[in-house]
Length: 448
Image (cartoon, rainbow, N blue to C red; front, side, top):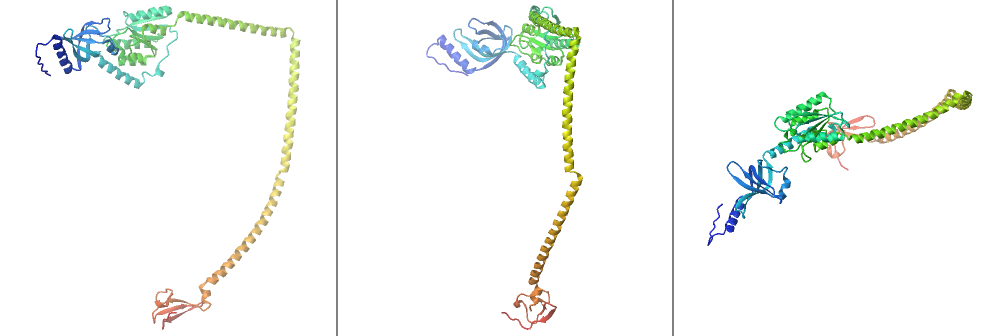
């Protein structure tokens, strides 16, 4: 974007610089740039100043202290990084620079995304489940370290373990903890130790590093080998802020190798003190038991020294038991006799002969009641039938015809004649009388 500047006189240095800054900032409000870090400096202000270069150009950059809280680790000279920010011009020096908002190491973003994807998948399969984790032995006879023998982590662990309990055997299984071959070496070491079955706990450890350095501990094969191991495994990878897939799968995670030694190796002086307290308590219990048994022995000796006293006491006890037995037997016999008498009375009162006699009387009474009831019902229905017959007789057409009436029907279809107007002259009709009927021919039709 081109801006026309038409001053009336010559420009000042600050005026030209301000114009150039306005042009740069308006055309590059936000950029993403990748390159190699060089000339990195971090003065007392806490800001980071460095150059970002490639094989053909170089640009200065600054990252203010307030933005550094988003960094996972500080950059160093030679690192390939990706910067996101805005381009500006530093007027005091007349240099343009990138004011960095966010910074990440090249490849770390993709690694972080791959880490999160694998973490979600393995968590869904149950590799991180708390109920699947094995208990760490309270006092392992042998500890096997899977680590680099030249790293500081192994020395920190051995130093701390020796201070806490020097008698525990510690085996070092050397592996590569960084690089392309590290994951395969770590998996093979875990499998071999687990197959041997002579180790109480495995400790997988290394010092801190970048996400690229810790990639072997984010390997899926390593994670599945840890999960399948029958031997408990403690992870002590990196610093306290570092977190890997191996930490999540392990039976116990220690923030540092030193902390792992403190978690796995108990303090000998604490165990010694506990053993001393237990020994003292056992001695007290033994002395108390001996004293009680001594008193019991004295009592037995007294009985054995004078058996007549013991026999007299047992004779008295036997007499008392016999009296109690006779008394209880008499009470039970009286109770049983009373129950038998009551049962006999009930049998007499409710014997079969009495029940049969009572039932026969009841049957006779019921038979009389049935006969009387049947007679009443027959008389009632006989009277009703007579009333109904008289009523039917009164309503019968034959009874009406018996008083001189007749029923007229057409000869041709046998239909009842109700109206004289429906009958024509000379039409044949039939008259039904109480007895018999008459065939007639109409000679005259008249109306009332």
